[in-house]
Structure formats: C-alpha cells, structure tokens
Length: 155
Image (cartoon, rainbow, N blue to C red; front, side, top):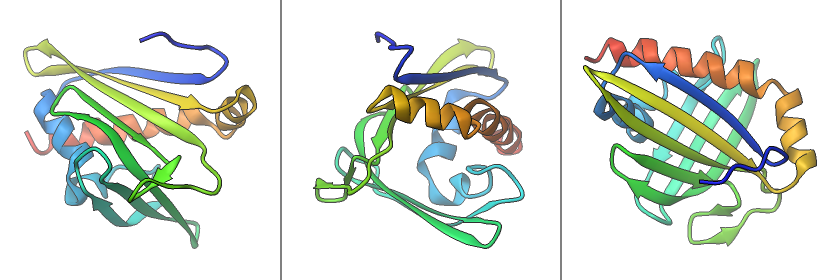
C-alpha cells in the first residue's frame, strides 16, 4: 500500500497477543467496548455488522458529551485486514461530514505476537493535520496499549 504523508497518519505496534484475539477485539462489540477510547472515556454502544457495506457504529461518552460515529466496512479479510470509513453510513448513504478511512492490518509474527498497523487516511491534508493536532498518535497509541492489555487477558 502506498502511503501519502500528507493524507495518512500511521501507527504500528508489535503486540504480545495472537492476531486472532486482536481480530476478535476489533470485530465483537463486547470485546471492543472495554478498550476502544482512551480512558476515562467510554464506549456506551457499539454495533458491528461484519461484512462489506455492514454497519460499523460506536457511541462514546467523552466527559458527558455523547459522540456518535457511523460508518461502514469497506473490506473484511478475517485476521488480516479490516477497512472501515465514515464517508458512508449503512446502505451506502453518504455521510454529511466524512472525516477518515481506517485501514487495519494484523501480521502474524509467530510465537503469539502480532504486528498491528493502523493507517488512517484523510480526504485532505488539512483534515490529516487536524487529526494529528487533535492528538492522533497519543490517542491511538493509548488505545493500542489498552487493546493489548485487554486482549492479553483473553488469551
């Protein structure tokens, strides 16, 4: 995959968790809710219809503010690749204010380890800068650490 430094923000972590467990954490609501936003914020609702065009929806409580995120899956390759976007909502309805597309890969490193990579692609350089300024690397890094901690407890 070609990366555009003006549009793409990238986070890579090698995790001491098998990719099947990481995949389950990303694709099962009860396993996504505990780690998906930086604590102390929380996911209050999650709906996953794990198929191309299926709903990828989360609702966050951030300091008492409810934030709804609606999107769809664009690609689903079990335990290898998961792509979702907020450009469309379920039924391929265009979103009024799209922000990003996330491309997640899970590379088996052997011995129960996985290289987890999140590429977050934006429509414009301005949107990518805005996301970086919002704390993409710190926030997604914290969430990756929470994911690994949670997933280790499932193994």
